[in-house]
Image (cartoon, rainbow, N blue to C red; front, side):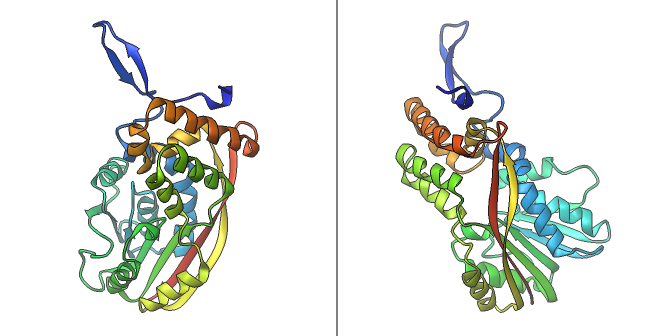
Length: 288
């Protein structure tokens, strides 16, 4: 195997009692995607997107902010810095594991309320927030119109909503999705497609307008990322996402073939042992 593609698959080692036990390298916690997400995905991808979204929001001290589909809280914590002690920030996610990591990653003294709930049924009264943010989450919500109507409902009159989604799918991720279909399974590939499924500017504008928002502005831009070397990024990404379970169920031979195929094709993108990548992002900004 090419040295660039050093595997971080689970290996079996003999122990003193003569039994074979699973060992997963320290870099990735195969049993906790939320921890991997915070450790790997956030610095490489989540944080650059979050900084762009929060900058676009132009948050002011004292504002009340809701972060929908907050994950491990990268946007939420940045928003808390901007609104200060006079403001309030709530992070909402459907996954309790993500919220547990979000809370543990929040520095002492930073007042953030974490809520486990569905974006299609927000557990807040009308006009409870001045700003609603949603980064890289709306594409995963089954009923997007309902989720957007809920965001509008909980906004104060004149309040702002900002929604950002990635796409179109970059060639690097197209390679990954194709290999997922062959080696991990069609549902895994479907996740790869869904990540980049909602970037069309006109579609986003129509969706936000149909939810009742006004002054709708939608822009497609790009964010430059510098990802780790191919094999490192491959497994860090897989084990930071819902792909982790399917990858764990796949046999060692299947994982090895998957890694060889992806890494061989990703070599064309490598520069200085890293993967530079420009990812498109579509951002909608509107008012209630």
